[in-house]
Amino acid sequence: MQSPVHITFLGGLGEIGRNCAAIELDKRIVLLDCGQLFPYRHPGVDSILPDFGWLLERTDDIEGCILSHSHEDHVGAIPYLFRQISVPIYGSPFTIGMVKSKLESHDVKIPPLVEVGDNETHSIGPFKCEFLPVTHSTPGGLMTLFRTPQGVVLHSSDFKLDPNPVDGRITDLKRVSEVSKEEGIRLLLADSTNTENDGVSSSESEIGPIIEELFIENEGRRIIVGTFSSHIHRIQQVADAAVKTGRKLAVLGPSMVRNVSLARELGLLKISDQIILNEKDLKKTKSTKVCIICTGSQGEPRAAISMMSEGRHPLIEIDKNDTVIFSSSPIPGNEASIFKIHNSLARLGAQVVHSGKLKVHTTGHGKAGELLALHEASDPEFFVPVHGEYTHLLAHEKISLNRGMDTSKVLSCVDGDRVRLDENGIQIEDRVSDSYLMVDARGVEVSSELVKQRISLGGEGFVLIRARVDKKAKRLLELPFVETLGWIELEDKAETVDEIIDEVGNVLDVALKDGVFDQNELIRLVRRAVGKLVDLKTGRRPVLIPLVEIN
Ligand SMILES: [Zn+2]
Ligand SMILES: [Zn+2]
Image 1 (cartoon, rainbow, N blue to C red):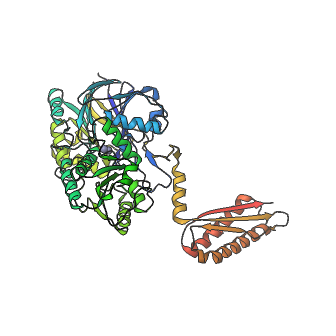
Image 2: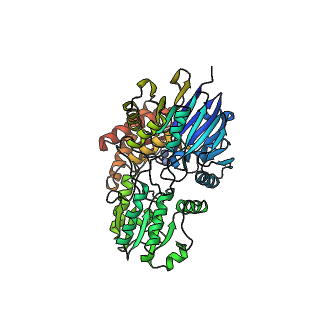
Image 3: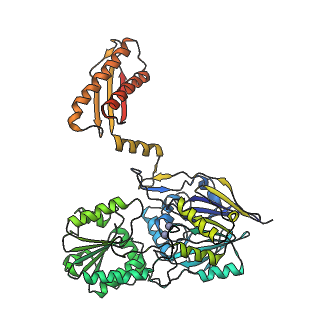
């Protein structure tokens, strides 16, 4: 009997983000992606990562880490994890370049970095891995075929089927179907992001002419384009439109500058030196001959567009001669901050163009029709949908079932599931933790208790009460002190604080006369009395901080 293959899903199944799986044979582990999830309503948390507890108990078993592409939901947890492990990282040259600068900026020791070319095969741990090109919204995406004693396991990476991609690099379904016919694909793990959208996505190369048309229409105005800094093909099309319409290009924002420079070095982005303006040249160049490309299209508060919209960008002041193009679509959760920026820019006089108005963006994820084509080409024996919210995963299951797969061959998995693939088929064997590991910008852990407290403080404010007690005299040493923030309107504060002081005084007087001197009991009495009063006054639940000192 051949050894079974285990796959442990540490993230990405039930959310768009923190994609991470461990594929394992004979106790040797290869990691497949190591991403982060951007927090939404988690105050003071900069990044949500997979819970690596299970993995960190087995650091000696980890042989390597494959990164399918450079997006943060696939690489964002690398600096955190690689503070604790050091194994070779495999990825395309662009992915490796991005990760190297990420590790450097976090002061993490660089592990061996292995650049993988399209259609190459590498032995990684116990697996022979074949890497196939995929088209996506960042260059160098790679599908991985793991050759295992239990057959071929295919991980799709994030992909779309674009017949006419900007760099000509087409998702290699031909090779998938060849492998399927020659060896058979035992298990398919595939991107579910766009399963709920029928049909096929439009080609990235359709965006260029629309942008160019916009540039022509906006002659005599300054143009600012916001997009993802890893979307090199979009940046290429913006640069081409600038060249064709006689503009020069200024690149703003640290990640945009870094990625443009990396992509130019690797020959993935073709922009001549003559076109690029440095800061000094930007100041000297007529604004109507300038195109600024920058980050912030997702409403990130520290990014260039956000700073411009608030009039606090050191180089760019927005006025009525500006056209700002958002060449992206809002990632769910970011809508409110993006619309706020649209409005602020419009108030400053700028014309705002976004994907809701004009087709200045297309997705990097294949829609239902493209996913079906992958299923047809791979014709897998078993299927597990990955990379998606729960509803996306379910919709992806339907695609495979409608194609004729038996329900027993399609396995629904979520974060934390550990599946076993062997001669008898596939099943969920076990569970590991699926909890959120929340970290701040320094990579320091933030507990869920702390986040709960911050949410509660942010929503309700706090009331601090301090009372000093004279044990001998069985009375208060002075009037209790009360301070509150974020709970009550300023004009009502003085009166309400006085009422709390009276209430605390009364409660403590009674207790002390009854001979209660236990500090915890006195604190409990104060908390109960103030809680009741606060509820009566406002119906809110601010955080209460009662302190009783016994002298
Ligand atoms: Zn992606
Ligand atoms: Zn992704």
